[in-house]
Length: 247
Length: 184
Image (cartoon, rainbow over all chains, first blue to last red; front, side, top):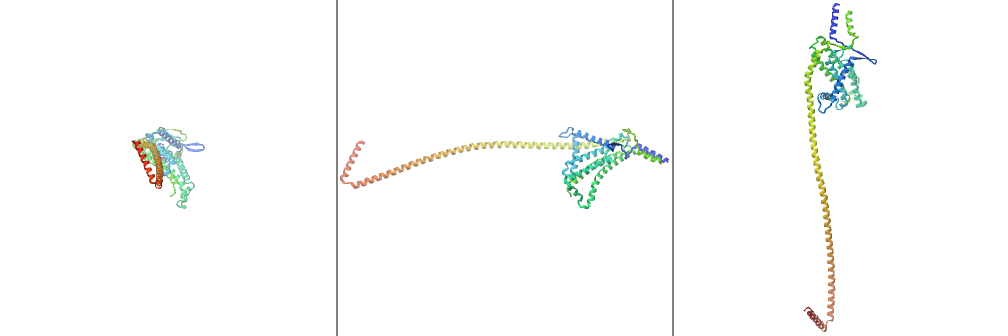
């Protein structure tokens, strides 16, 4: 019993140091909905960062771009290239959508990895990247589904549903299933990667507070960027796939 | 055993009546690691990023310069083409004016020549008429003269005898003598 007590005390002590909290949320009640306040707060910060940098970038546009403008034009070029390679010739209208997805996810992930969120103590739960909450990633993945349905329907009309029996009608159930697995895999991939990433860092910090977590943090930065890229690329690829003729 | 469950339960009921605040524990907030990561990121990322952006800037600059050059070349060509057009138009005007005046002159010349020809023809006609008239008159005159002569000869052959012959000769001699006296 003593050992157990001791271990439980140790656990408590460890817990105090590490402060690992999974599944702890700060709940706000908004119009009958329980919302995860820490996600909202960090999302607002991310949105503020994005909007702020956008206003700075477009405040004084010049023919020969200076630093900030140059950087944001480079980002825009990158997103356009991405959309173009995935969607094809008619990529124009989808650049804003893909760009929003990419930028929001990227800045969210990196803010989770770089900003010292833990400086701020919440009554419940803790601040982290918005994308380490499954609600955020689902909220990002569902519009993607809507977007590729919209793209396919506007491009081909009701003939879009013909792709369900391509190449053979036997594949109909699988094709229908695909429409459900796409947002599922998108949201779970992003959520799992970011959550695992932050958890690994937090656990390592709780074990060895200095130096050791640094490589993992870099790995986390890398993964975060890659995940944002993957999400945007897949979204664009789904849209492109639903818009192209059957092959 | 109860303690363990308690401790796990207490995991589930983390400080409930807390409020927003600041965590000042440097180790727990992971500040040192974060600053190291940020520092390394800025140190290495800055070079890469500035290279990237510089390249992009240079590319844009060279593109702009190229297009400026192209534009300048095109403007020059346009200017040249305009100058040529102007020259050609002027030449065309000149030719047109020259041509008109030439045509006018030619026309006048032609008209004049035709008038002259006409006049000459008229003259010829008149002359020919006159000449023909003259000839006809001469012929008539000759004919009349011949007939008169023949008449005279017939008369002479019919009615000439020696006495008349003699008389005629003497009259003629007398006439000739009178004529000689007159001429002397």
